[in-house]
Image (cartoon, rainbow, N blue to C red; front, top):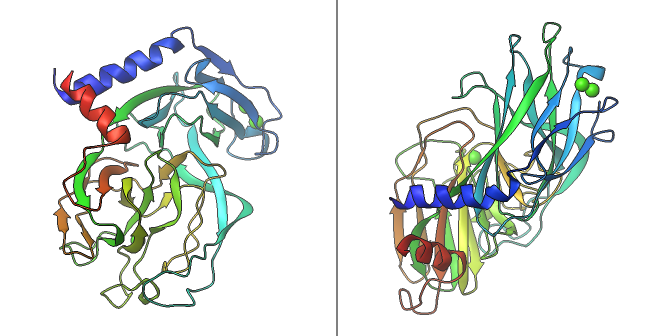
Length: 342
Ligand SMILES: [Ca+2]
Ligand SMILES: [Ca+2]
Ligand SMILES: [Ca+2]
């Protein structure tokens, strides 16, 4: 059995405790975030949502406040796929908030001044289902077993007379190990890598918590880019203490609940309402997202990297150690390595 199969099997086993999971039936009046139907324990208590929507506006909108059941620490790719017998036409969206931009970095270049923006209160579309995906009409997000919470909305049309069913599926993502680096300033960049993809990225700690300010959409002189800040590519230079880190990389737009730092050229991207998940909004596929990671001691690695499918986020893991290569893998990386060896 190959490692991918093994981790898929592990995910299946993890979800086996949800074998008695039931379908959650909507209750009307669920026409806004404030009036959303709360679904607690999604993934264990419930694995599907059923409802009816005959309009794409007003009472036709069905909002759900989804609270995932906690699971073991890992990177999970979750999908909610809408099927409607006979009358396809429902649209699913993952909801979020708008962003109040941070003021421009007061100390252009490196280091960053530590300032970030904030969320506003505007209900915003983060991701919309597509008929071009296989299967059609799925929403996709990445969680970490931390019981993530988010708002999900289904909208119909005048012809969607039959009930919709949105069904949850989950698989485990194994991050790609990209090496050991010295503590201190480390840069991660998609700029000058032989492509022009509009990338968007965020760095996570060993517990898969998004690190405040450790993200970049577009390179900027505010952040010390080697470019002019004219592209939509990413450049993130930050200081790192020893530890394990994860990199989430995709194309524009990539949303978690962390507001953009002051040295990002684009600081008004949509945000998630809550922590514990990250969502890509783009249906673009087969995108070159090659990047380079480099520390101040001259350790550098260019990583070939492609976004294969709609809404995909690609995951990488690196370690920061005083003596590169001397430390053993820690944390989730070590657990995954052990799992592969079994
Ligand atoms: Ca409804
Ligand atoms: Ca409704
Ligand atoms: Ca970008």
